[in-house]
Amino acid sequence: MDTRKQRILGDIEKLKTMECVGLSGKAEALNDLASDIQNDFFTIVVLGEFKRGKSTFVNALLGEKILPTDVLPETATINAIMYSPVPTLSVVMHDGSEEAGEVSEQFLKKFSAQNPQAIAEKVKYIKIGYPADILRQNVVIVDTPGVSDINEQRCEVTYRFIPKANAILFLLDANSPLKKSEKDFIDQHLLPLGVDHILFLANKYDDVDEEEDGDLIGALQRRLREAFKMDTEEAELAEFNLFPLSALMAVEGIENDDEVLKEASGINNVINKMKEVIFSGKVEERKIQSYSIQLMSVLEKLINYLENERSLRSSDVDVLKQTQNQLQDMLRDEELRKNNIAKFVEKETQNIIAIADKSLAFFQRRLTETVTDNVNFYKGSDFKEYIESRISRMVQREMENWVASYSPHVDQLLRTMQQEISRGLTYHFNQRIQVETAGSELKTSALFFDVSVVDISDTNVKAGAVAAGGAGLMLLLGTPVLLPFISMAAFPLLQKSMLESRLSRAKDEVIPAITTQIDISVSGLRNEIHQHIQKQSEKIIANSEYAYESILNDLQQRIGAELKAKEQEQSGKKREIGDIDLQLKELSTIMTKYRRDSE
Image (cartoon, rainbow, N blue to C red; front, side, top):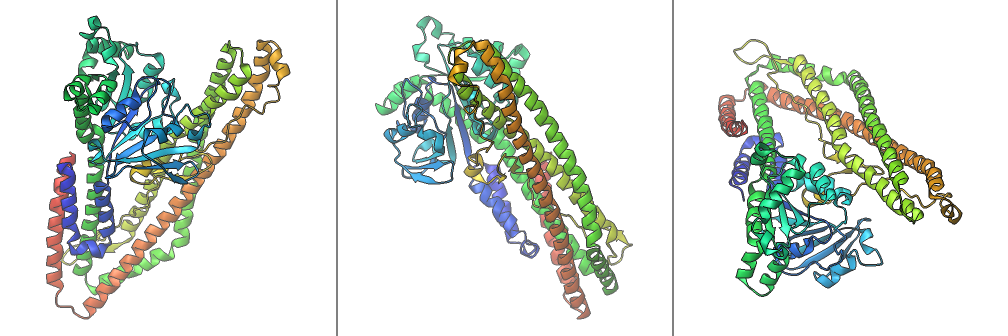
């Protein structure tokens, strides 16, 4: 485990021994953070088009032939492979059911692209546990479905797995030029994330002519630079991680226990670089930064709690009674406060809906134009199959892509609204409550108040369903986007009589029908998005109100307890304040360390 993670875990254990953690109710937050760190995993996503040797490569990583391989397309499901002391396999269906299976090449062939029963279409993902060394340190390998065009990759691969991956392994064919579909996918979905955690693997390099072999990597580097228009300076700043590889040779070396063959295959170099990237790459840096920020948030709340305690214990009875009355007045203002929050949320909700509608309208226009162009440019003979199958899939995929790519933006807008309410309530409290501490003038906010609303930021917009993100592997393998089913098969125009007419006339007749179907589907999606935003806005109101009233009631109880103690002339007050100061000093020391690291 990374030393920085170990340090955070050590500080969490130290904090849990402090009295203020139990009294402030922050023990659960610290336990949750420790659990997240201990159960954290490193994700490797393997990408590649058909016939790139992807499954063979994954078998080489695992050290045994598990995934089916063939000259024909095999992988039709998402396979999540993680460590287990004994081989295990579970097939997770889209309906939530699970079926135990056997970890074998023969069993997995049932879910291949070659199976005529199309069983794979019902599968959400296959979870495989295996005792491979590469998986021991919480590493998960995600083997993605093979596609003839990488841009047809499943939505969850493009928008769930890739952005969260510690390392991306993209298999190319050392014998073929970079295909346009590969270039487009890399350009649109990988390069924006940076190239330092992406390993391009030139597989089948052992098939390259000996004359070309000498400058294979140099030639491929130049090909990649030219494809992405990188000049010399850019190339120096962002050198591609490119490795020659023979996955087939690696598997043969493993099966025959031939270390020379394994070394010659290039698999060892790939594994070494892969470990370097996943354990110290930028994705891991972001995770550690996130853990530090979460710990600092808890530290800040603990410091605020202790400062409040100190203020309470330093105040005389009259001031505490005055503060208690102010708190009661604020609780009585409930109706006015709720009305003000409701008005603000209604206004912001309508703004968010308007922004989403504008984006969706632009998407619909672009989608309609794209589909129309595709239909007009069609030159084949099976027009019925093209419309009912290809166009239907394209519309479905584009809608899924829009939902997956736009939902984080909606989440951010909702999060911003939530934060504005929190800031407003905090300001309102700190302006209303004044506490006179012993030996000082009146000061505002001696009782520090901070509304923390339940975070909804991990909730994705989904058509037909609102699903909150979970933790760990289930977040990565979350519920797929549910969209209005797109079917072009019901068009009455696509009858045999129409197919016998001229293709141009058929196109003219079918385009309006497709446009209508797109309009119906987008309209349904729009309604689902509106409902989602409204639901989340209602949650924000409820959570804000609950958090606000909980803090006011908690302060009332604490002030009541302090008043009772003061009226009984509790003799240990000085000692208690000294204990608080010691805890504050220790918390401040830990906080300073993390603030310095974040600068």
